Image (cartoon, rainbow over all chains, first blue to last red; front, top):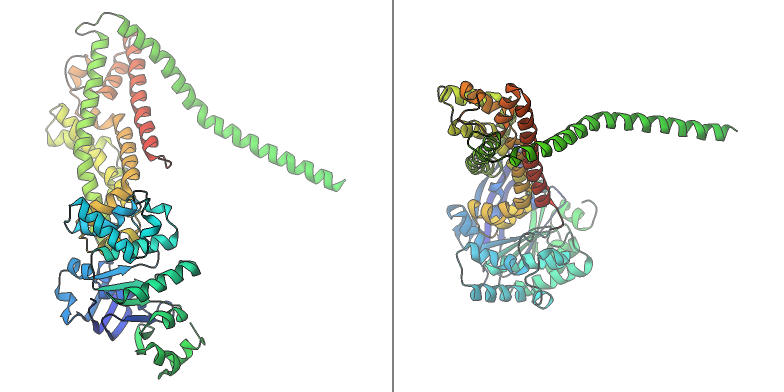
Length: 250
Length: 273
């Protein structure tokens, strides 16, 4: 089951440049929360704060609190946080030196699982959950570069699911994919939210409307408005939100 | 009429520039080729001459063989010390150091690798107060190689895409796990190639060793630390027909080693494997 995530007054900077200002947002368990906004509004930085990846970039600092099921992730070991809060990146990034199978198993292996049979079993499970198993089951030992971009992205999803997270962060997961692969990913998201809490960053408004239960609109590092997806798109309270969702800018 | 003359003029100009460029290229390449040719021809003749004679203690061929062995041992020992140290430093500068620290390390390594190699020999000479030995030679070469290794390995490691590193961190891998599971394997082939180039450069290096050689013994061809490049130098200094022969034999062997290492580096670096 997924767990709820909550950001309280999260601010982030790169050196002197302020990227996020005091963002507070609740992301309910087993729901899809979409973060929308024009490029450079801080939406990617925001989800990178949720799994503590932001701080790995030189010059990055932040303040505020992120709570996973009520516990502050900034009081936990970052590697523990990232095991619970998995991440999918905008460009598929399977490890080029590993086979398809190893790509999925690598997370578990890094966490100490050595038993080959159990690794293979978990990998198969993850690949099935990522709707990729049938397409790769005969070529598990080939390099991941034989897969199409859309398949590579689902491989990355399988890699993330294999370590049994409770939250899955997705940073524009379909932005480099063709429409058909995008559809497959969106259907997958619908399926995954039964087991995981999903937070998806997207600049594609239709995508947010299609997949998200809840949507938050970011602009210039601030969270302008949040609400159920239907409410945000049909009856936005803030003029800037209305302008954005009706396509007047962005 | 105007069209034809325009065309001829353009062709003439083109021919002129092509011939000037070809001439320049030949000027650059021909001396090198003639050097390789003379070393090749005379070297083979010298090797046949030297090793055709029965092997005996003190014979030119024995001295040569000893120089070769010393060269290989010195090179192997300095590589064994400099590579792990240098790669570790490069891992630090590329993966752990912040932007400013990384830049500082790179700047210092650039300066150090640009220093004349004879200086590293001098430092070791002073440190060991003039003792000439294989150890001193190894130390001098390590000192000479280290900044080059750090800089080259750093360049290769920095080129590993951040996307892979973040992909690994996002799975809950620690920094050190990420380095061994993702960064080093991804850099792998390029790293080995870069390090082999450093080895090829180092094998023929004479200057740092020149300083620490035990003058008298070496020049009289007696015992003492004398790897190939040094043998070559002292044989040249001795003069005479036997030493002329030795010089060519040694030059050929040295060249062969360097070509072999470069060849290996290119083979490892080939993209289609």
